[in-house]
Length: 326
Ligand code: NAI
Image (cartoon, rainbow, N blue to C red; front, side, top):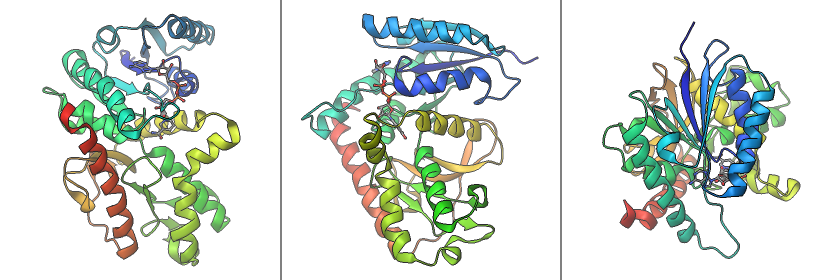
């Protein structure tokens, strides 16, 4: 039988993790034969650590056969020690009246420190997935601190956007969503992101031949996917949590499944018109567990190019806002 892998999770007493941790422990992320040790990291605040104890009690009470241990800590050095995967979910939310630049800087401090510590203490094969917003830029910041780990090990999540896009296209076409394939998210996890439909297929045919209403694709479709997070907040009074947790399960599971084709945010290296040093959503193919290659060669029409330019601009501005910290 396999030896356990160590999975560090920040924000472990938060909303998303309350949906996430139970599924990791059940085998949904790493497979039904892969034991895990959860290293749960929260802030050094009594209320947070108390809530974390409660979550750990519930994990105990599930009697998950694959859960071989838990570490509860407010010390990132302990939490990231020997971690094979570090899932960075915790972040500082935007407070009332807070400027975007301040949000970027406050989170920048967190991700600089976590990036450094992961680089120092995590496992040889360490992989990092960032969910906490602004996810792309937080990921770029964490990666900037790594001396040992290559930048490719740091990915940010755009899978929730991909899943949202898939569901919207299936609904419009009136088909089962499993027939909708090759939907990729380009750029930032923010309303500027481009949920590309030009290379998507529905039942093996180009999506644009099945959904011929190009005004819908360019307008309401992109808008619905881009503003879905805000729509969930308006409806639920809380931000998306179960769907975000589910997307992270998909992100990591596909990233550990050779041959899987999916969207993740990675260092752009200048592909698809993105600035070389930003982390942008891209289509990738998983090569070996935890590694991937960007799928190149998709051609972009003028509409796609303008969408990519807009989301790239936002990523470049975010990078500029934290440049003095890197
Ligand atoms: P939440 O506020 O319920 O939980 C966040 C938790 O993180 C809190 O318990 C907090 O104490 C903890 N935390 C904050 N700073 C930390 C640090 N330095 N180390 C360890 N823990 C820390 O928030 P929720 O709803 O779980 O969302 C978490 C993040 O995920 C937010 O930034 C949110 O914007 C983002 N998000 C990203 C999505 C994506 O698609 N990339 C989708 C949905 C949410």
